Length: 252
Image 1: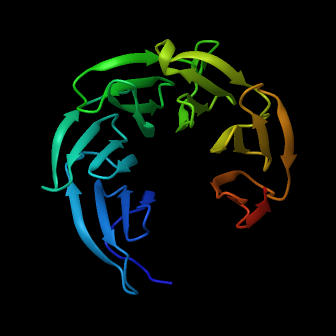
Image 2: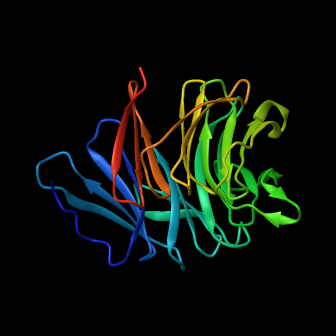
């Protein structure tokens, strides 16, 4: 294993390029960093500074990088120059809690979720907020959006602190077309696997749902505490939690 040193505070997110040669990380030290991990000894290759608060989330693909911070701000980066290209202060009320890049029919979009329970849809230049959807607000309370995922058929799936998973259709102005309410505790992690949406919650349960019908197909047990992270491959699901265990499940 190689230890990469560079951040001065907690690391809040990591993404790795498809070829496995570059990693991108964001941190409570208010920076976003790129790392060359192509060799045996990884090294920091670039540090991006511009946020005024801890960086909580990021979405990165090719030369497009968007990051969101604890003060609700969004920054679109010029990765080649290492400088902010566009900043939106207080895009959300409270923390930025989720980010995703979406390939739309007419334009590429930036999707952001906040502590305020709002899903915002912006053009990739961050010029305009096209839609605001509060699918995770119920009974007057805000259910912070914990993750945003895009399906192969063009829908958007979000999970919230309201214990629900919501499915939105961009072709219907991101209106909600489905909701899953089987989780009995806060949802901490979510991933997609074909037509399946897999979620991990605070009670240690991993639930597998059919997105098309919303039905819970089965649950997976093993973690004793909150399931904080899920990872999927073509054949396996990996879950890790607060109990310190990492569990692999065959899904073929």
